[in-house]
Length: 119
Image (cartoon, rainbow, N blue to C red; front, side, top):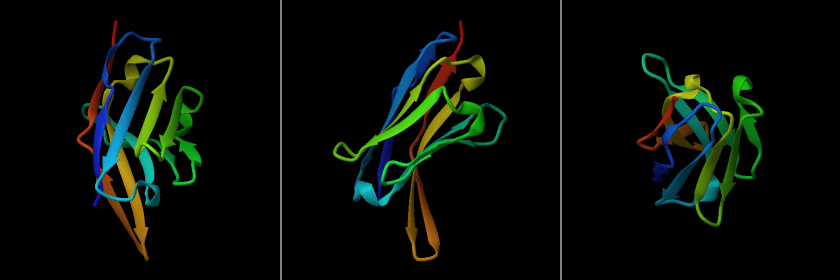
């Protein structure tokens, strides 16, 4: 079972940038597709971006061009570079690992890191 620890959140002004990191341990990193999700107060958790073990990335349509997901398999880490941040990007950001075993998808979550965009 993989364990995930996010870092890099904080307070940033509108228009600023942050890079989130998610360090994985306890399992073979490359068997997992990785993703970032976020949850704003009073809202459902939503997909931000995913990246396959081979590095293919996908994004929520509303975030394309501002956010970039990447992974370093040698460091067992996935990143989320966030640029041109807006107040509506304020949320807790969660790292996710997905592994498919047969017909079953297994999901693992980090504890989340708070991102606040405010002047």
